Amino acid sequence: MAVTLPRDVLAQYYRFSLYNSPFDAHDEGCAIDLYPEGACAPSPVAGEVLDTKTVRAPPKAYAAEHDHLVLVDTGEHVARILHVDPRVEPGESVAVGDDLGDLVRAGFFAPWVPNHVHLGFRDPDANSYRASGSLPVDVAADVEAVPWDGRGTVVAAGETWARLDAPEHPAPGERFAGVANGVGGGNPSVLDGGFPHYDGGGLLGGRGGEHAALAGKRVGTADGRTVAWDDVTVLANGEAVTGIALFCDRERAGVKLVGREIDLDVGDAVRVTIEGVGGADPG
Picture 1 (cartoon, rainbow, N blue to C red):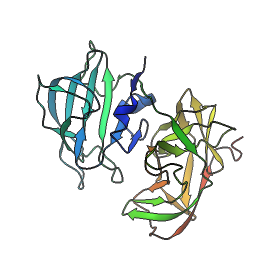
Picture 2: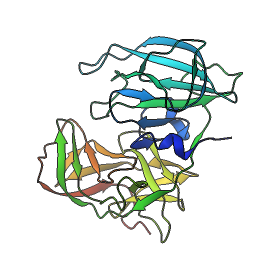
Picture 3: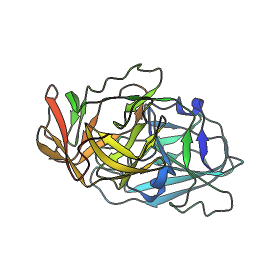
């Protein structure tokens, strides 16, 4: 049975994603990444802190050498929280919104991933220290799916990413939105995940369907809300990039292109195309 995050919990964060990660803990949407403003981590759960543990992270030049695990007994489940250097200790009680500590940019992150709180849940009798085997996570929020035709202009860029102005968020600050699954008619789902650089992604909210489509091309096959990406390549103005980061955002819905090979500047007009074995007609 899925654990559902209430609206007031999600309201603390400007962005969330269940699938935009390469790690086992996110398989089939069994964890969620929550992106707060600022350097501190507001707690997504209430309960008693069971343990905090420092773990070694993969060595990367841009990241911290260590990450941290915080375990919280919510009364129904054990919450597993990562990427926070804790200011809480075992035995302390925390409420939703309490400051857990400082966000950590760990070596588990790809270079284009912003700081965030990783959250998963396990049954009380399960091994809470294991990364895999957590319960599915769901969100009590309406997420608006915004169509996108593959075009946009770069409005922000870094060494490993470029964000486009399209699709435009329909109501910034009022509700979460994301790129629409381009398959089918009304009430489409939102695409979530690292496409296609992670093994799979997901379809959140709306009507799911059997396939996923993006920028006019079928890009994956759905099993429930989980999508296996087709063997495709993303191109920006004809040049291959690592992929597209897909998520749900409360402030902006513009597509984020990612990869070390990104060579785009603010103001550049971009046409994104997808090449490979996916079906040409999303249906």
